[in-house]
Image (cartoon, rainbow, N blue to C red; front, side):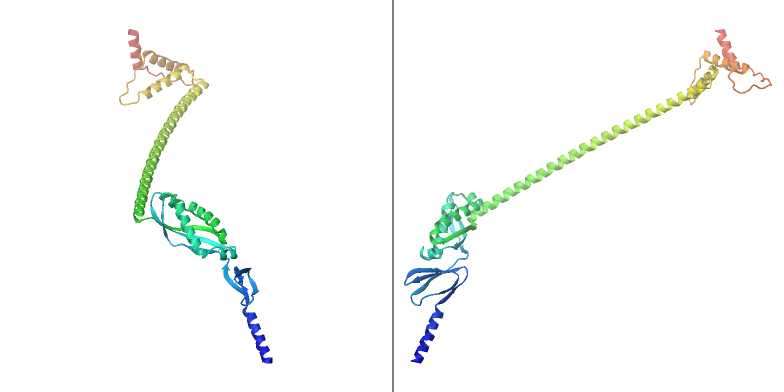
Length: 324
């Protein structure tokens, strides 16, 4: 009897430990008692009644990915293409997920395929290729609303691949190549145009700068010549002013005129014509100055200056004048 009790105790301990369950994090267990839903165990340690309680389903609460294979979809303009999708979802209610639908993952995959066909069937080929974000958003909204009764939360839907027919791909490639050729031609034309405009502007600026330089050079030369003439005339005026200040008489002025006339005649082919009255006036002034000593600033010598013989040239001019 004693051994029987010991064996029974050991058996009870084994049964007790075999019915202890530890639920890991992000996991829930659905428990049935005699075939009826009893409870949902969350993360932690739990004990079930042997034979009476049963773990109906182990549900993970982590986000899962459903990668659907490519499937044929017909667009609004009757183009058949292959599209595969990726659905991100998680289970938020283990009880509803267990009893809401048979094989929830398969149901979600079929619902994704039918929703995709409905949305793409309303779009044309170009709209399908350029409206991925719109398709993703509409599919996410529709699938999330439809799977609430299954305990599934659809967080995101992405179009993985869009594969049009081979002839459509060839046409698109040709269209893309033609568009790139057109852009290249436009860019080259714009480049040539910009280069021509730049060269024309450069030539224009060069001509403007050259004209401005020539103008400035002419102005500088004119100013230099004007300055030289001004200085020359100012020097002559200063010389005349000095002659006037020292009290030069008319005889000296007449001599200066004569010297100026001589300078004017300095040349190989120069010919000087002197009026008779000018020669007579100069001669008279010179003879008068030498005789009287007027206009001479130096002291007169005690000795008399020897008499200069009369100028035969002047006498000839005087005789000619008297004869006239």
